[in-house]
Length: 563
Image (cartoon, rainbow, N blue to C red; front, side, top):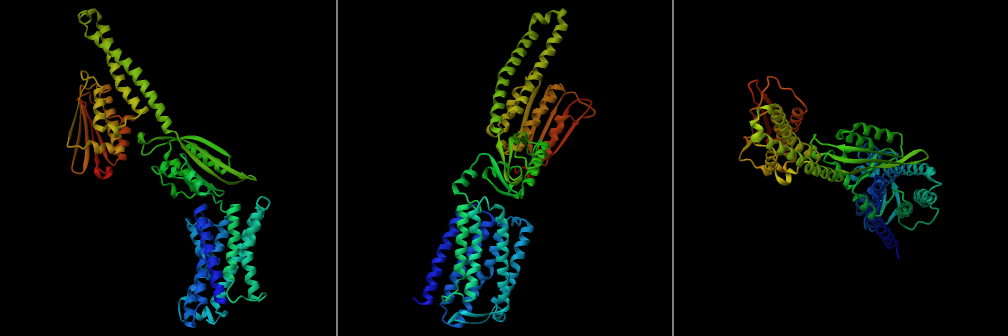
């Protein structure tokens, strides 16, 4: 077997091994900058081996000078990726997603790029290789730029060893075997290169450096797989993590977010973009903006700063103050420590909204069945008493009559309040029954003998409105509040609701014939109406006069509600 055949056989076997290693670790390991930098070094090694096989089979100097340009690419950059691996492994640099992380990567590769550029031009190529012949590829006179690149590469290798050794000293007692493998990995490459360069062993006739790199990466891969340098977890473990019902976010010792499961995106992306949060503090501050209990988030942040082992609290999340979008969560923060220093932790949000909804539905059902039926029975008895001819004919009972009439009115007011309370406990599913049906059910609750309510509309697609959850619930709540105010405060006999579609907006007009006022006082009900309409990008106006009547005019642009 000649030198060329021996080189091709050796390089082919090593390349196949490297490809298998790359695929295996990409599928099985936790995706991290440290892993990707090591895999990138392995990719450079595979390219080095492939182009090296082509180079050694060159049949002329011109063909050799063409192929060597390709071989030089992985040769010049593999040291940079190895150095990045050591920095990420030792947590010396931030994530590549940050500006600082990008600048550090650029600083590492800039000298390697500059010293490689002459290889791309014929005029400057002597700065890389002064003399090289196809019949003897080992004896090469290297140019100044390649020597400079080699100095940078070995500086990176030595620096990598120092960084890894310093990191390993702290873990030596706990992970002795892993540390030995990690330290041996770069020493193998460095040792073989020194031995072959000084001709301490007979050269085989081809470059052994990529083979030495494969041995180093094999040792490092063994440390990765067996001793969990990157915490590679089998795929099934990550499938379990990703399919947890609770929204879970993992952070490292610096508070940087390293992973989050699918539930985190599903649960929280309606409030904010979870992927945009770089660390646990940014995540908690985003939570603070969406919860009604901001003081609990302040306590959570303090617990992270103080490395409290376990913290939990209850949160209520809301969006645009739309009650239908409110959710209840249990927040858990678990911090793992070693020698009083934080090693990492996780945040978990358990959605209690389903349990809360079921409990509220049960209470609302009992509330409706017991209280509503009881009030209806009282109201019916009072109505029979008021309509009794014997009672009306007796003028001596006028005060009693007034008292019963007042009690009857109170019972009607209470019947109007019951649906409001039930709706707050368990909001009506407008998307299922439709807005128009929901409004009709609301109107039917009002005794027509006390207040006549009419609803008008022109060519309105109520199904389309019902599908816009925020719009439908806002209109329903405003109509419900308006009916209650007109009956209780305005003592109105008639109320009209008009929903029309103008050219570029949806208009809701509500008016009654109740007692008017010369000045409108904004209570919680009217303020809540304003907030709901402003959240939809619309306008709302209230008007009244001392002569009587109260009206509400609302306009919502179609551009804000995708109508």
